[in-house]
Length: 339
Image (cartoon, rainbow, N blue to C red; front, side, top):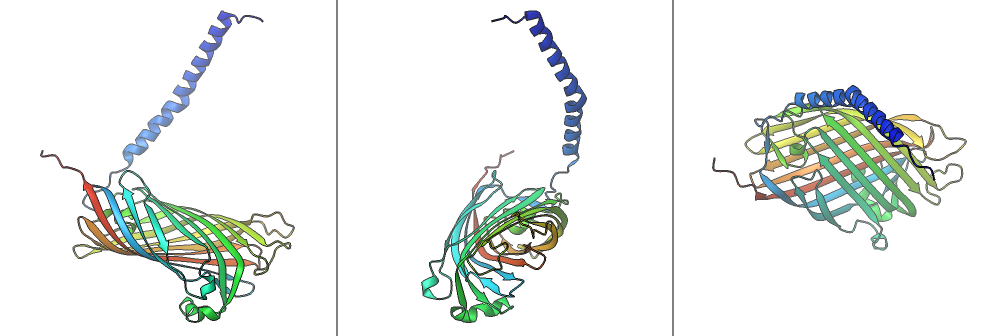
């Protein structure tokens, strides 16, 4: 074995350190300076508009209703997994951006032999001063079919509707947005009541969304290339406005509307794959809160409309909604200094 020349090793080490110092001075240091200037230019949240609670932990109990259906553009049929209601409990820790909850679902309406159908409907929320993000995970097995367009009249004769036990659908929706007026407006105060809006204020928002969907069926929907599995991926941008309206001493009314334009692509190699198609989407949130120092009572609602396209004439319109009645109790307050 040959021994390494110490002079070569020292010279190589010297050259690498000098070049690394050169790149640090040329690129990293200016980038760090620009980043620090950008952070320093961001204004802090105005305490006259937004109140930060001093508690470390918030506990909530809730009752909820989950509504979901989708419409096949070709057949004109609406597919309904049933009416899902339940109760739950959860908590929120001040230094974790997400809140956690556990839910117990009640049996949906319809024939008793279909009460054991599987359902998953989960939502992850992460809100900060600058950003607000939601992740929806939904999975349904077994659907009723209806030609009635009005959602309110579907459940009057749900037992008489045709049932499709072979139909299964899975969706993953992620929607994120940046809040421009974070100095005076709090998205967290509007939808979760973990902060409190003191003076009415709103903000423009813009962001991006990702939607994945998989439909598995033996014969219910229109097949593509004789396949029973349909998969799509939607990615797009969205923009909208959110507003907190404060009235009375303790009441806050929140509303948020996002309109998006999604690029839809079929996740399947096929000769009749249409490629990229543009379709709109809509995301709405609303809430009412009655806020006190140690607890809040609220009603929240979420409504999302998303189009998934398989071909130019084969599309599915997804309508997802959730309504929650919540009671939040704040615990473990920080001890204020006597100074």
